[in-house]
Image 1 (cartoon, helix red, strand yellow):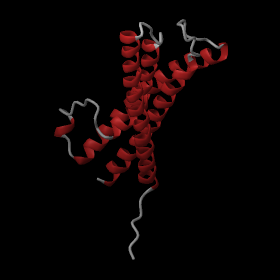
Image 2 (tube, rainbow, N blue to C red; image 1 turned 90 degrees about the vertical axis):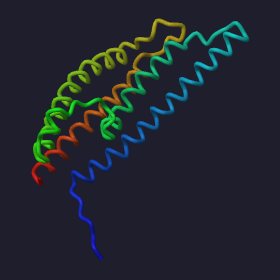
Image 3 (tube, rainbow, N blue to C red; image 1 turned 135 degrees about the vertical axis):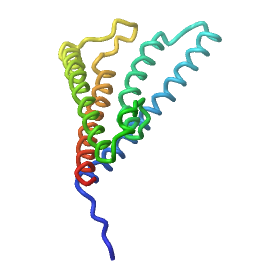
Length: 171
């Protein structure tokens, strides 16, 4: 009986991958929601001469949430745009080190963005700020999904740094 021992970092990476995949399914459900809302709006305008009056607003919220919720899974599955010109001339250890630094740079940028968005989110929550549209949606609700997605992406990037560091040490 052989037991495959995996490192803590590998198990953490696997858990983050599974959670990221779940968030990407939520993101896919938001696409379905947007499709249904647009179809409803078309029917209402074409046949009943009315509207939901919130199509642009709600689809915009869903689009923002969809992008940030799927970001970690897109990164994990290597679906983001990458320039591999320099990376292709490096050896295996060099590639892992380059990936670790790239993830660190992305982590720094995302932390700055998270700080700014979190300040906006907390201000809107504290003061009960709502959208200026017909729906008067509390702005913290759609912003919470963006914060959640970006926060998870930050965790994903931190785990990636650990994964690439561990691989570079083994290479």
